[in-house]
Structures are given as structure tokens and as C-alpha cells.
Length: 220
Image (cartoon, rainbow, N blue to C red; front, side):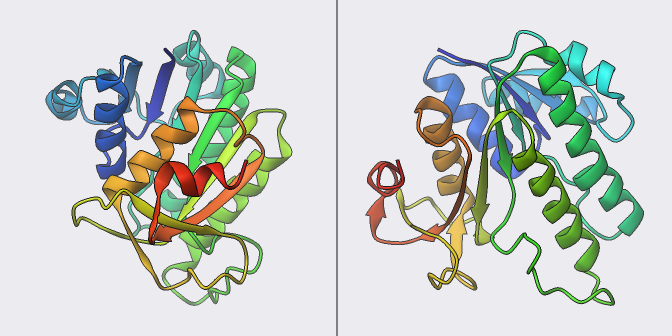
């Protein structure tokens, strides 16, 4: 069983992932910014640590990550404030990667989004640009590190019940504009954490017709 740290532990995907992992016997610690959210984390089966990544240094993050086998980045500024978006989705994310290296945590799973990348196509005068660029920069930095990284690129998220079925693909496979449930994103993250062979991969996906395990195993 793995010891997993989820950064951004009160997010909708993070809470679902914590529940899945804890039910399967993994030890999960979720970082949260607001102590009032500790009860929700506890209900999901995880321990909580009140840590605001926007203001933590690499050394402070590293100290908090020691002993973990896997780091999952599922944090985000939530949009609306370009400066904070850059501070969290780019700068803090990058510090967490350096902290993971410093702490000896080799495995790192990034929850990104389908479309992040140098060709994200969002114009600079669009309100979505700071997020798109921040995620692009963070993903690029992660892929340049010595971490055993996996980047998850789900399409548009929904809160519908999970289907247990996805479609995976690379560039040009037509997943842009499709949807995927947060339940299924959490299931994909859990599968990637529990199985080898996804290191150094960016996995783009949306809901489809293939069972999650079968779809992901086709990539290994």
C-alpha cells in the first residue's frame, strides 16, 4: 500500500480520490488551506494537513512531503484572479515538484486539463489565458524533472455519476469539447497511482465506451 499526499485536498476530484485510495488501504494525507474543511477530508478517509501552498517555500513543502510515496497535485486558485492563478497553478506547483525531489518522493501525478500545452490556443486577452498558461508552464516543468511523473488531461468536468468508462488518446483524437465525470477522473488517478507503466506519460481522456482499466492498460 502507498502513502499518498494530495495537494489541494478539498477539491471535488481530490475528495473522491482520497475516498477511493483510503478504501483500498492506502494512507492518504490531504493538504487543505482552510482548517474548516478538515471534517470533509476526514469523512473521505484521509488525514488533513493545513498548509497553504501559495505561501510555502520549497523547504517547507519538502518537510511536509517526507515519507510519502506519491504526490498528487490537485490544487488550483479557482480562477478570477490572474495573479493568484499564476502564484498557485504555476509557481506553487513548480515548487511542489522541486520539494518532491528534495524529499525523495519520486512519484508525482499532476491533475491538469485537456488542452494544456504550448498550442493551447487561448489568446492573451481572454480571461482563461492565465490559467491555460500557468498549467502549460507547470506541466512543462514537471516533464523536465527527474520525477516519475504522470500528467492527467481530462476534458470538461462534470458532476454526473461516474461511468467507469473512458476514451483515451493523444493529439488529434477528437476528445476536445467532450466531457468526463469527476468520479471517473478520480478513478483514473487511482489506477495510475496503483499501477506501473504510466511514468513519463501525459494521458488525455474523456468519457467513452471502454472500461477504465482496459483503456489505461492499452497505453502501457
